[in-house]
Length: 295
Length: 170
Image (cartoon, rainbow over all chains, first blue to last red; front, side, top):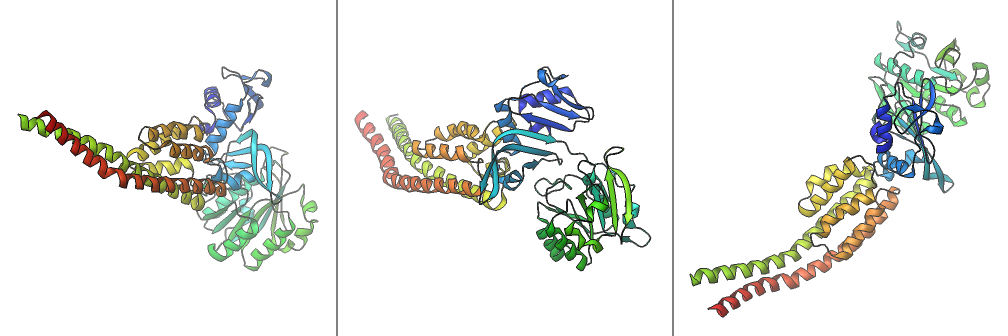
């Protein structure tokens, strides 16, 4: 991944040999910031960890060269991703982009004048779903329960979802992942960079509506996996899947099941889910607070 | 001895005439290759969103001569991983085309197109390439006309000059 950084920064970061690196933040005319398990820090000109006030200052040239490298000098190839504010690199690493929005027809068309980039290093956690997969899949009957994973932000629901997808697919279920924001499989040019299982098709960048239609018409799924449901239109999507006899595994934001089930979009679709998994950060991301049978 | 000398003089002068004539033919060939290149690039951008490094890595071996060397230089520049802007690498590689007889107005058109490649969305890229293609087609038509007018002339001039020198020296 370091090959996508401007040469001056690449040399610093590679030379620092940081372990468990999670983020690399480039902000124009401000110190280079890195994040690992211990927190945020900068690197001096000699490549040693230091306070940001003494850190290497990212120049315009650094940012421009990094943009050239992450886009492969081909802005047009990443139009859709850039309008979503991110790019995915080989290996599933994600680069968040900040700059000036350009609108066309009322929609965000692109970002220009890029002023900062945030490299988030991808890390799958095999085994993250070990504690819940036994509830989701009844192995003796070979049946899967449609499952909703509920958690506040930053509690590891996408990590859990990814590993659950992998385990379910490896058991032999035909799985379709509708990866609207490329966060589940972290696809690069349509190819999943993270392991989502043997029997999984990934619809990368598809909207949920189009993804469901495509999946049902052409991919014969037994299970559809999607992230971040919570809009009114999602009720229709869940209904379509239920009518087609397809199981669903999805996530949504919320502090508790009580809070989520009051939402209007879900009221009409309560019958779709059979299992709810509640997460928190109480003992670190991915803490399972409860598993509720609701169907 | 005189016959050998006469033959050598005739061959040398004829050869020069043919070389001068071939520059017109080469120009037509290079322009056709550039047109083919830009047509393929436009297709790849429009239909596959192929990135420039991937396009160049695949296409460079498929073009021979000067255009092939231009593409190879560009491809190597991108693969170096320095983050140098595509426009700067394109401009450097244009030197190869400039050293091989492409007219200044064509080089200028290529320069402007290169400055825009990779910097905007697919629709805009297509527009830029289309504009370049129109100019290249015009340059090709002019080059073909020049070739038709001058190739025979230089070939005959070369032979005639050789004969003239032979007669003069005899």
